[in-house]
Length: 567
Image 1 (cartoon, rainbow, N blue to C red):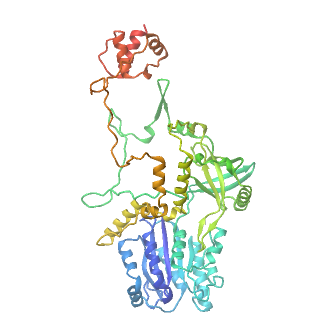
Image 2: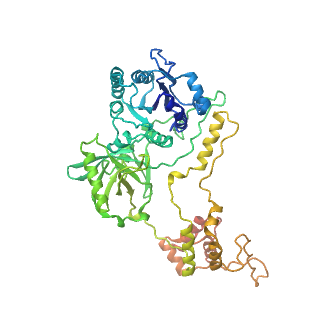
Image 3: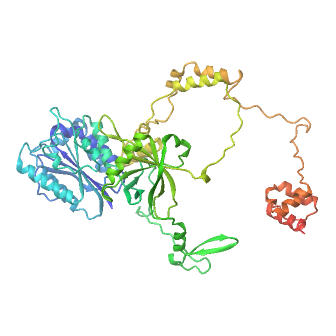
């Protein structure tokens, strides 16, 4: 199904002007071009809705895929001219949140597509929109209940007003309960700045879908339902869509399998898989292949606990996952999960588990590392509470490296480099650096879609700030060079040419003949290890023993030597 998001905006003068930039930002950050979005104003003087039955409700955009035209229309409402245009187009009038919610319900019912995720965000800075009118309050509560029964999640995005914003009297009954109890305080806390509101909208808009749902077995009969989530996924440029050259319509590719001899089309049931073992082709059915791959049913099984210092950085062999309790699957999971998380955090230990994440997946050893929740000044969650799933290597995955022998640095050189490192330290945050390639891609697409003269400039945030680094380091770089490199060292100069050997008169050095003793060669033949010898060695051996061969490939030379010496 598709995801849908409706912005329901209070049209009072004090909020519309400040929030237009937020909607433009939200339209540009849609996670998929297939998502549906709508923009509805309530409390307007003018009225506009598809059914023409609601007063003081203005449907600026109905529920549809966002496109370039919509972004331009919303962008036109920004700034002073945009505020004047909004006042002329919609104006400000009476407020009936119940009618606005009813109108939004009609927008959802008019959609014939399957919707997997339905969310409605209310933007306002008035905690009493009806000024104590009990009839309108009751109507709004009824309509919000109807929406929530149909699976619509209602969120409140409220800005701080001078005398404060109290959610309890009215909006607490309108909005949906938080998905997590830890978000309750965040849900009741208004935003002081528009930037904080944008962060909160983005956090709500991002889908929190589990990659898998498992049972964490803590012992016999003690199961905790958990969901596995990905906290970081590599952002990639959207894949190109193939179009038919004549009409520019998207095309769909199909893959079919044909018999190599008869040319007939093969059905999936006619295709089998094979594996060569002992020079024999073992043919297997699909069910047999699945049975070979299956170890056990998906799940996570607790083995024990280890101190955190036993977990090393080189144990991290793939991106970590994150687990969180699923209360809907097993009642009491959240309570038991929270108790396990608290104790592991207090004792500074991690849980060692055996994990099978999906059917036909091989089992892996994982370390569950506890993490407490963190929020920023705007009450936006930075780090959720739960366990990081660190996939541990097997003994077969560990490699023994043979590092090259390099000269050892002196203590003075080490101390000087420590000074340089201390001068270049800074607080790193991954969310402060955007991928310049992807940003440039979207700037170019934005310029094409919105008919802009030229794309906006993209700042490459990962480029080193050379001037600032030189200012911080001062003379340390030159001092380090004097300690490490020779006086005449020039990093930009060309390397010195290799000297020619004197005994060859300036010509290329001849390669010495490579010979293998007869006993050693016969031992290679008996052990079947002739393949370890190089082609020049095999050619020299053929000449030595008078083996005639027409080929020059390695396997042909080996076969000729085996026939000659194996007799």
